[in-house]
Figure 1 (cartoon, rainbow, N blue to C red):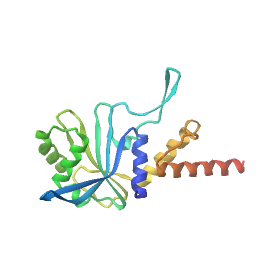
Figure 2: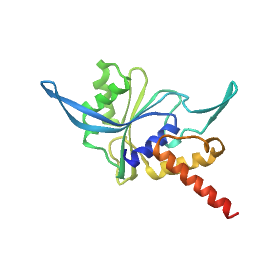
Figure 3: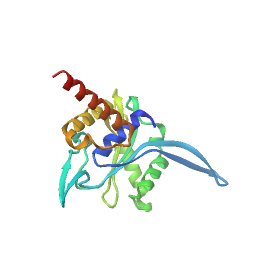
Figure 4: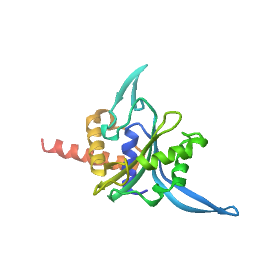
Length: 205
């Protein structure tokens, strides 16, 4: 997995999203044959109130708050179709293709088939759309830097912001998280850096 995609995946997970990465899009070309046309870096869904619960007895505590930069709401299901770029923020050609967007919506299962075309058109025109069952679909780009808008209404979040957010999250909740075994490589790497920082700091006290 691309290291930038892994970083974005970790970021979205700690913000309460379920995430699929590098989702392949294939096209039928006749006689049962298919060809790969693109893949989608990030498909993510967050349900209202999602977060990390640390249980204690019959109760527990929620740790961490959703990054305001994401613009997620606890009033509706939030669906993200995301591009990840280690360089400038931009959309791949496939992100402008209605068939690719229809395939993404089908993967979410969030839009009745008869309304898909209408939702896709609005998504491509404005960068966001609302399905008939009130699920909010958004196009985001996660990139190193921005030179210009990658598309109408398309939000950009920088990788630098993401790295800083995760680092702050680990430091704020270190007493709870330091024994946690994370499976995603980006989170493991940032955990290692924080452990090194704390060890170095304690040696110089």
